[in-house]
Image (cartoon, rainbow, N blue to C red; front, side, top):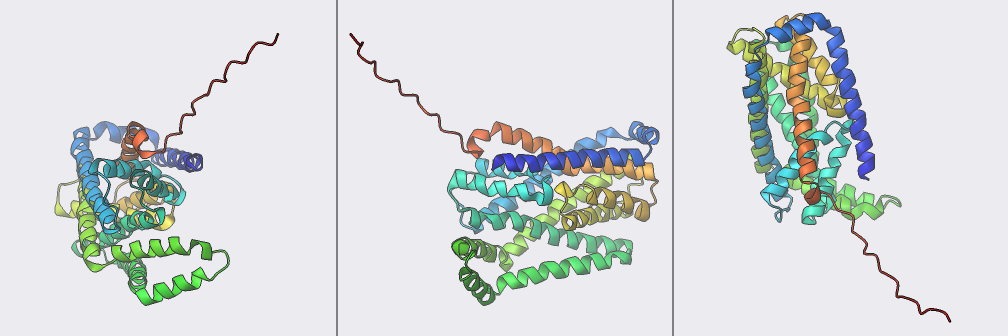
Length: 335
């Protein structure tokens, strides 16, 4: 199974390299190097620190979700290892490899996979709602009313899903119907476990807590992009901050809707296009800002997650059992 997910990760890494090369070529390499030379690289220290703070807030949300679905026999250290190891898994197509986090949890705590899968999905749900709140806040401060349609469509889809999950009689009736189907009936117990965890996660107290944490976490990402723009010479004003917040928030929405590995391509193009349209940056300026932003948002986490996965591999992944060779008894010599 891990070999299949490794193949998905390699596909994502290949697409990421192509996206990097594409942005670099479209931005004119010589002009891109000029912007890199003029960039105040010292700002990368607080930018990366803000990204780590984002991870810390998101981990609190992750560990909280595990408690909500009943996984309480796992240490904070082990939970954090699973969480951080999930960063490289995001570069798989459709982020399908993130399912491996549920297999790791099963290996460590014995929790059923069907019970913890909703936690992986809930991370995206709460982050999506948080980002939409930040987009709305940015729109109000920038009077960028052209972007209200993004908020309306995405928020409507998220709320519809939450309402359906909270309608317990409807969902239980659907589960009973699935249990009677010839092929799907054998998975009835797993479907039930999946729904029960999902139902707990979307209850209002859990939802408010997780969206609140997600809002703070994504706000830090906006602050990081703001520092990148200031490092490029843009004015350190409130307008620049809200522009940065809108740019990174729109890229998250575009990446989520695309289903591309690590949001590769969709997020890159959204950041570049929005920087040009909203702020008026040139193509090389927008391309340079995109490369720096995507390194912080995606590739920095991929590197850290890969290092943690290697260091904690014995704890996270089942180890093959060594087979002890049994020496045959000596045979009596034949006369």
